[in-house]
Image 1: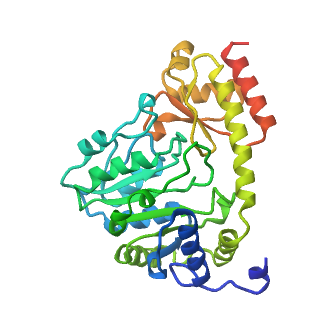
Image 2: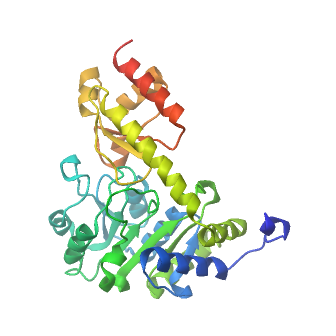
Amino acid sequence: MDAIRNGFTRYTAVEGIPELKDAIIAKFKRDNDITYTRPQIMASTGAKQTIYNLFMAVIDPGDEVVIPAPYWVSYPDMALLADGVPVMPYAGPEQGYKITPAQLEAAITAKTRVFMLNSPSNPTGAAYTRAELEAIAAVLRKHPRVIIATDDMYEHIYWAPEPFCSFLTACPDLYDRTVTINGVSKSYAMTGWRIGYCGGPVEIVTAMSTIQSQCTSNPVSISQKAATAALNGEQACVAEMNKHFKARHDYFNAGLNALPGFKVLPAAGTFYAWCDVSEAIHMRGLADDNAFAEFLLEQAGVAGVPGSGFGAPGHIRFSFAVSMQTLEQALARMGKALAGA
């Protein structure tokens, strides 16, 4: 509000105001033990733009991007927009929806340019442990052309027994080819403010900034001030919010698993329930997960996103970033619809 009242409405530096960069640098050091300097930091209009800038900066036509499935829906299309080729090895429920080192090794070719990692994952809620990250790094060390992009957006919506670990925290020797991506949207419930950011090698971040300068210029000036306040402020509210998300996760997952034909694994974080509904689809005689999502919307008044959009047919994703009362009603409605009542 102070920024608005003081007329902070002019263009800023393309890659972000100095105080926001300093807040991001402090956050990376405080939370992840990663050291960056101002030229290595860029703020964008959401982490989506950060990732898009990265792909545009480093991908040449025909370069491949390894994107483990299930994936966030935008990753493959952003690779395609950069004239790249998405390669999407599938990690199913039997492996906790996490790619194995063997799968990664098999997916990498001479054309691979980027490996895209999202942990905790949207849509699955799965998160990689430090040991799993180290095993993945052992593969990537053999392929020096591959840039690692790690999307840590749900870092603070997390409750697994082992503390959250960013890729570079586990594998600091890959510092020179890792871009660590995050934002304020989820940790501080600031989705509409549209501030994402990254830290990475100077030459890559500089190229990303050049691209951003020609497509959007700086992120919103007022949002940059708000993000600075969020990152530098007292963080107890984040832990409190996370506590409530964990309670909703536990309640909602248990309720979903009680529905006929639903199989839901416990998540390590995020505010999504990721459901294998292949059996429920078969039980209803429906064609696929798109038809099942439509059935739930029409018959139960409950909205879920079909798994096909995330590279995982036979699944559906629900958000539990709603009140407990809404979750109770959703479970009751779905139970009634599935029972044919």
